[in-house]
Length: 117
Ligand SMILES: [Zn+2]
Image 1 (cartoon, protein in one colour):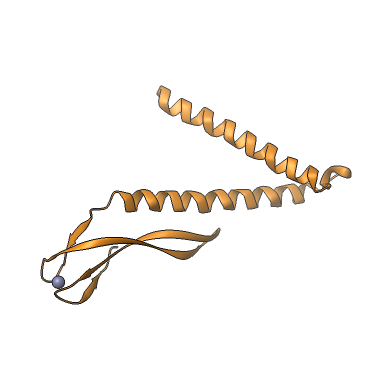
Image 2 (cartoon, rainbow, N blue to C red):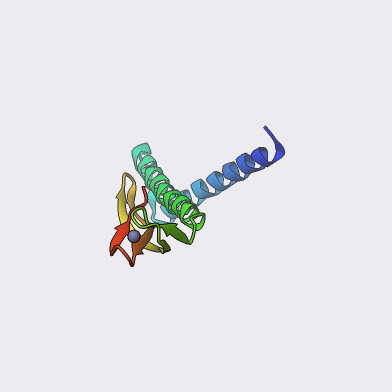
C-alpha cells in the first residue's frame, strides 16, 4: 500500500468515526440515551446514515463521469458533430432518490436523440 492509499484509509476512518460521533450526538439530543437504547434503534440510524452516503457517492461518481465526457459526439447515423448537454434527472436507487447528471445530445440533421449507454 502506498502513502496515498494509506492516507485515504486513515482519512476515511477518521471521517467514519466523526460521523458515528455526530449520529450519537443527535440521538443524545433527541433523548435516546436518557434510558438504555435498544441496539436496533442505533443500528437503524446507522443504516440511514449509510444510505445517505450511498446516495452521495452515486451522485459524485455520476458527476465525475459526466465531467469527463466530450462536449460533442458524432451522430451514429449522419456523423454530424452534435453538442452534448448534461442535464440532471432524479433516479430511484436502492438506497434512495439520487440526482444524476445525464448526457444528452440531439442531431439537428436527423432530428434524433443520441443515446449514451
Ligand atoms: Zn444525424
